[in-house]
Amino acid sequence: MPDLLTRLFRRRRDHGLTCRELVELVTDYLEDALSSAERARFESHLGACEDCATYVRQMRETLVVLGQLPGETVSARAEAQLRATFREWKAGSAPHS
Image (tube, rainbow, N blue to C red; front, side, top):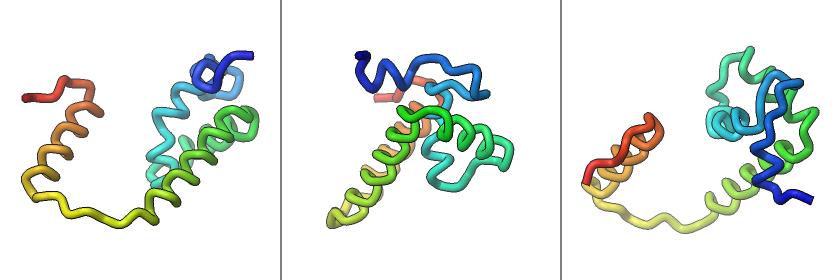
């Protein structure tokens, strides 16, 4: 039986959204930032794909656990650098050193 990541990244065009596309949209879904049409496609795929439903459930559980961790202070400079690096990564460009 293929592992979870292999199953997640299988293409599932029959549900209007591939597993890979779902993984790329999961943060926006959990933050309620998808359009109603995107949310409908996302939820339609979840209803038909047990692997992705498991993935989203695990992401929710992870967020709950992480929300219970005590916060640590990060300097404003370090936070700005982390945010910039994440934005660059998300945009598909390499981070600057």
